[in-house]
Image 1 (spheres, rainbow, N blue to C red):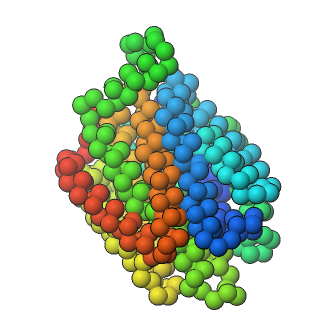
Image 2 (cartoon, rainbow, N blue to C red):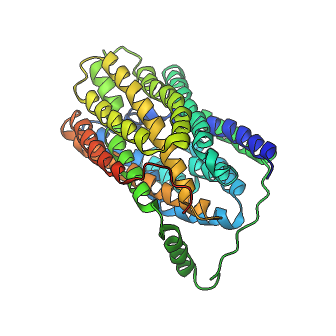
Image 3 (cartoon, rainbow, N blue to C red):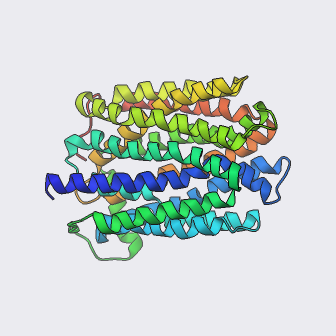
Length: 402
């Protein structure tokens, strides 16, 4: 593929991911409030919040590697469209949920059919020169973070003005537009790489592919870091809207206030991702990853004792900068570790690691939050700080090949 073509694909994918993440994040700060509208009250709100947020991660953990391997065999563009069109249908249906159980089932289906970030990352990484992966994936993360920044504010405003259900219908429209952008503006010249051993059952071929991915590379360590860092953040973040509800007066626009926190984090993540990715390309990823990890740990812990809303805002600034650094650098490491033609499988495993943390984190955080709202933030801080010491095992220079 020519340089001109992969840049055009990056531009179209950038806009599509911006729309998709703007849609998905529109409802992110609203789950506890929507759950209450569906009839849940008391301590059950925190527990159901954790369950609802975790639900898609469970099915995504199962389907992520499968979709990744299918993308290696049938093309990456197809997988992005599957995630976006499927998400459009399911998010529209969530706006029609009658009970929290209905919402739970739809969230499970969402995890099975979506996964736009992994699909888009695979598409971009498979066509980008390896020496430009950090910078290019940082630019893609910029779209993701900007979408995550704009979405909560628009979602919170729509919820305050029109109610919670229209937020999901708005998301369905965003995802539909994103899918059509991929359909009409992205061109993929895909030829699957032929490997030995194409025979055997699906599980035998899958086991062989997994052993090929992990052989002689740092992929296992990098995926472990992805899981641990995401886990520390996800233990605490789902309870943040309840902290806002506890701090602000009853007549405040809590939907907009909770959305603003996510927006602030997303803006600073968008700033950090391409900068840190470029740093990693030029000087190696270990140092910026170390800095990002320990800044993230401190910022998560900072939220545990926030007496006023302004402290929460400041913590989100540091969280945004740190998350932007960790995501872009680890994504580049994965792309460099992936064998030729196996980018889909590698990023599918990345989806598995991320999804497991997304499943475990909010559930644990929800149960901890039912006992004390500050406890999930302290636990998240400790998990993140401890995982940071594993970064010292990475080589000082970036991994160039698997």
